[in-house]
Length: 478
Ligand SMILES: C=CC1=C(C)c2cc3[nH]c(cc4nc(cc5[nH]c(cc1n2)c(C)c5CCC(=O)O)C(CCC(=O)O)=C4C)c(C)c3C=C
Ligand SMILES: [Fe+2]
Image (cartoon, rainbow, N blue to C red; front, side, top):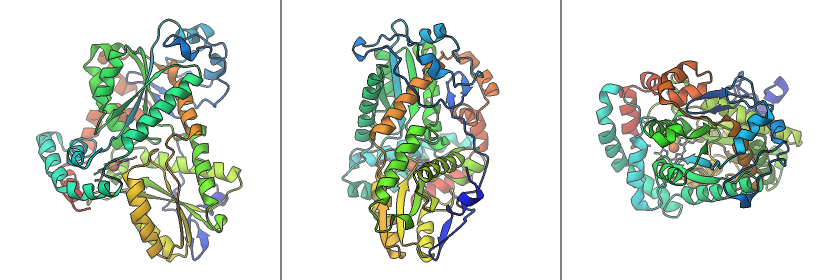
């Protein structure tokens, strides 16, 4: 967390000198505990340190069956007793792995158009999502016509972007590769699992993944959004969709599952990010003078201020943790955080990436290392917006040396850590009971869980018609 001495190294640079920039990093009490959300049970749990998992005795070649591990208990004891699913005895732990359990992991992601012809229907799906453009209940009937209109008008501009990165989004390929790498990592850790990919706005759609999960007879499912930080507009939207699918399906209602809503605090993830930054810094002529520039995908300010989206708080804490890790390695460069990719006229999280780049140039920063932080795959906003648009802007603004940290992709430490996250979540699987939905909303004790589940609450609070229309219509221009 921020100390006064740390703050001085994390502000904006003024004429080559570092100055604390409160607008970039307001100090705040950050929630440290990652919450594991079961769609039926909410657990506020303490992080479990990545320890020895060698005791799990299941072998990959056993297929679906699994065995208890004496050492596993050791591993799980770090969790809070607040959870009903907390396992305290060895026999409880054994229950996790005995019998013919079929473990599945569902990776949730955004999805992207694979060809230029996909762009308009992809945009339609995106804008038809009430977590992206929120209309008051009375005007819901306008959601699809509005999405159709915006997608048709925006498509030519989006197509240009996708054309410039090879004619489509690389997201499916990368996510499939991550799924395969995760499957292999789980297998190596003696937890044989099937890993599925469910995209929100393009193929393979979440619904398709769910069909496959049912077809394969999965009995324990871990839901893992591939967004390190939770936002209503990303993980929240995917989880809400999933909840509606589960609610209507008898098989799924009875399938044990758990959700890992965000995982930005995990040691493996933080270390992997720090290593990528450390490596990239070495390419600069004077590495210690480089401004580390975290650029996160933005969200409308109202999401954070009115709907309680934890995205900004999680983002800031995530950056704190990465900088702390870098400091441990003797790297004390200044850093800043800004938000990119805003769409439409409403105010989004600030500072904006483009404005900050210009400002840093004016303040005399000469070397900038861009770090995409909200997403773990290369995509249009890293390959086009950062690599082309922001680089050009930076060079025009007086920045002489530019670098960009690659997205994590299949980086082994990261994938191994995701596998650990899955394994650590297994004691939290539990069956969903639809009749408990209301009760769950009342007893929910963690904000991400509230956001995932309480759609009525969100509907009341998030963007009203003028805001939504304004945002929708002006999406066309930005
Ligand atoms: C954490 C990541 C993301 C957040 C938060 C997010 C919010 C958000 N996005 C839009 C509008 C668009 N997003 C688009 C593409 C896109 N968005 C993300 C990630 C987040 N979005 C990714 C990874 C991608 C790219 C996928 C790919 O194809 O590679 C697009 C389409 C592209 C374009 O036309 O610019 C739009 C539009 C809103 C309105 C929003 C929050 C409300
Ligand atoms: Fe987006």
